[in-house]
Length: 190
Image (cartoon, one colour):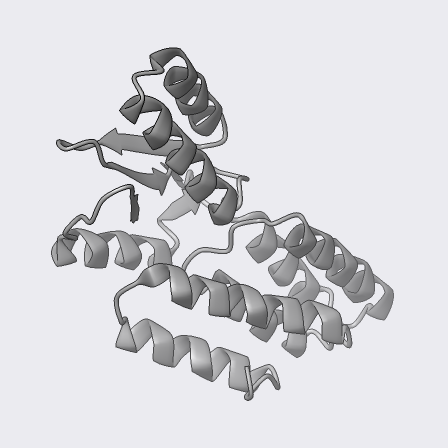
């Protein structure tokens, strides 16, 4: 959960509970908007609200909500946001996780692994949000499948680094798990 426009205090129990659900795979991100785009749009909406341009603020809110972003206006003019998430209905996964698992299942078919690697790289280039440790898990699965695409593995490492930056609070256990996954994938310097 990110806060923009004003400083907000985070409730650690809420963050831990949400991250635990995400790590267990109980939640799936519904948004396709990259977080940098969301931050920019939320900032523009805050500015529109501050200047009492409510029509523009409402239009930006609709655009964000259509992109799978849940907004919460706070007292004092601030706004917090988070990606909308939906409960899994037994077996659903983020697109990146699904590609990585398919690659792992197809590890004996080099052409299939290569095709899935290309699809995953395109997903990274499109700005697919890789929340929690999804990027590290995907790198690990692709490496186990025999993926030889250095650009994909480097993109996943960069996506995980961006996710570390987004967290804003240290998460030692998840950070350790991520580092183990990236090291096992041969990305120890990431």
